[in-house]
Amino acid sequence: MFLKKKKTAKEPPILTDDLGIHDKRDAYRYIFPESQRLAMSFKGKTVALLDISAGGLAFENQGFSQYDADRITLSLDMPNFTGDPRFTAWTRILHITANNVCHCIFEDCRVDEYEVVHKFVLEMQKRDLNASRNNS
Image 1 (cartoon, rainbow, N blue to C red):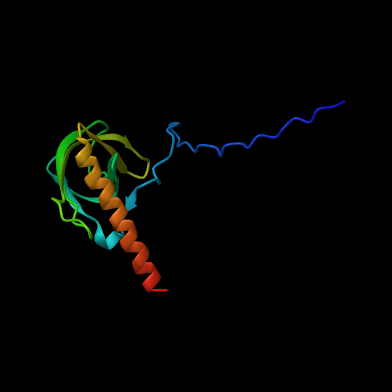
Image 2: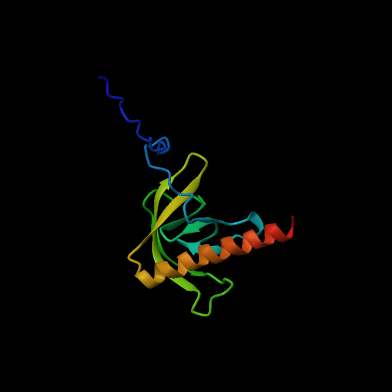
């Protein structure tokens, strides 16, 4: 008698960039439309946010270096939110891509601060979905 070997489902491959860093940045991240990018000050320069998540944000490099850090403040005005939309955190550049984008993490944030960013991402994604449905 021969036993058939059961087939197991394979997990999808985890994509990595050229540094071998796992690319899971699409999950729960809000990518700002070019005309609606938030501005903030980083190390004395005004930068426009490309995207944001509870873990960090990205913006175009303006002469910064890897591991540069600064305390930033954002006003995350969003629909369906009655609390204080200000978010303040230490932000550190972890990686600067070949196309000159600074990928940063938030450091030393409290849970309630992360929750404001989670709420912002959710509400902005919902707003964009509703707008795209109304335009179709």
